[in-house]
Length: 364
Ligand code: FES
Ligand SMILES: [Fe+2]
Image (tube, rainbow, N blue to C red; front, top):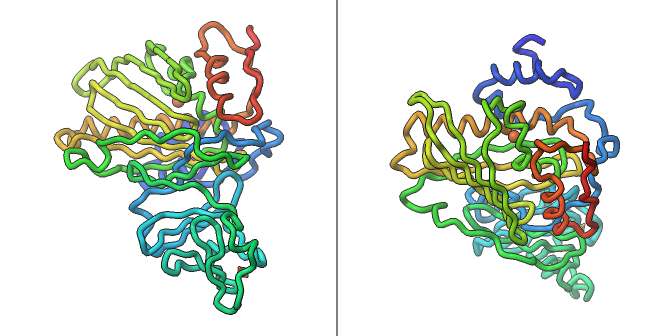
């Protein structure tokens, strides 16, 4: 494959893809991270789960939704409408109008704090109740109820907009973690990156505990020392690593934490103090949106090392994406003694599923 040819096919050999990636810079690489991959095998063929884990999920950045703005969004295989009312509050309801099914996110508009359907101008509040029908004398009682069009619990925390997903519409079961560093005057604003990874949440979530892949996918000289712990809905992974830098070898540490399936953050220390605020959100059975937002202390942010660290972390996710985009879900996988704690991790993950899945591994 010539360097300028895009890897447009799901069957492109991986070494060719990695070679292509190594030469892909700037805007081209950003476009590659979001581009569709034609000719993918179906989600059924790849045995990707039909359900989604419940939890809080990031759907946008706060500074990318203006007052009065309406956006069509798609997550959990559903069309949704996101808008910000005149009062500054972000709201999310299903996109399809209960009247005649227009997709309100396309062509609708924000009127005060309400979402107005483009078809016959019914107006909904953030709880999915119809509050005004400009041409009717009476609003039908069913339309006046909350969740006439299903609504989504919505919050803004850490400069991001989050919705709560539960397949049975159970109310939120935990709180999001709040970071005082985000928006703090001593820390930089977000440096944002995003990917569409054509896989399921479960496969992506196992990346952090998949110890052996660091050597084979990311080229780490050794398998790093790891400590993985679980506490209820929280997971924490700490790795002590030796980084190769222009200053020589530097001892560093990575602390990755998560709450539920959708909220994760990492602190890097040693090379350059960096915080990564991230979120994974399923778009469809075979597509996960990954957002990485980096902040650094302003005192360190200008350095080449600080920029290099961010570039390296993103490059690692690019390398993972190449695998994930073509991954099948194996339940249970066939594991060996050098693998990370996949069984324990699947026990942890099961708590976010209405229908738990097998967790016993097949041993080699
Ligand atoms: S379809 Fe929405 S108002 Fe008629
Ligand atoms: Fe990885």
